[in-house]
Length: 187
Image 1 (tube, rainbow, N blue to C red):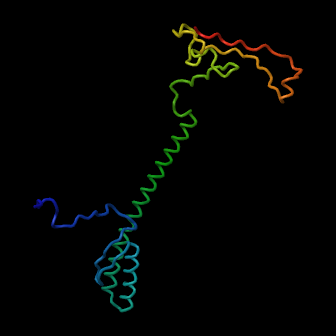
Image 2 (image 1 turned 180 degrees about the vertical axis):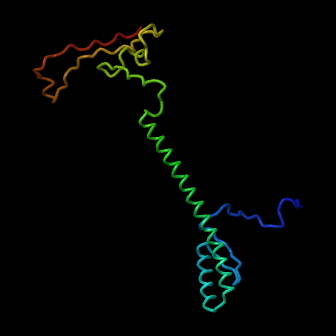
Image 3 (image 1 turned 135 degrees about the vertical axis):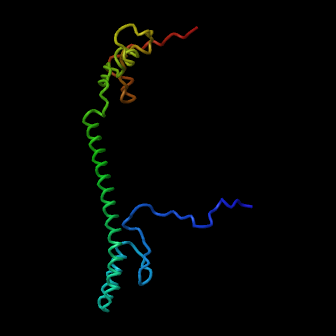
C-alpha cells in the first residue's frame, strides 16, 4: 500500500509560470463570463464589451468593463517593462562580452605574462639548428644531452641522375658518379 504522503490530494501538481510574460494566457472571470487569452486579447475583448454596453446605455457595465480592461493593461505594461529591462540587461552583457573579446584580440589574447618564445632557427634540411637540444630550447650551456647521430643533421648525399629512357641509361654521355659505399654488415 502506498504512503499517503507520496501524492498530494488537494491541488494537482502543475508547474505555474513565474513572473510576467507578454504572451502568457490568462483566464478572466468578468461580469459577462470567462474571457481567455493574452493580456492584449483580453483588453481588446473588454473594450469591445465596453462599446456594446455604451451603445445599450448601460454606464455601470461599461465602467466595469473599463476597470477590467485597465487591470489587464497594467499587467501588460508591467510585463512589457520587465521584458525591456531583460532585453537591455542582455544587450549590456553582450556589449561587455564583445568589448572583452576585442580587448583580448588587441592585447594578444590577454596573455601578457611572458613574450612568445621565438621559433627555432632551421637548417637547410628543415630541422632545428643544434639538433634536439636546439628544438627543446637549449640556452647554449651544458644541457645534459648526449650527442647522437639522430640529433646531428645528415650530410647531403649526391644523387645520380636517373636515366630518362632505356637507351639513355646504356649509352649515356653523362659522367658516371661513384657508387655509394654500402655499410658493413655487423658480425
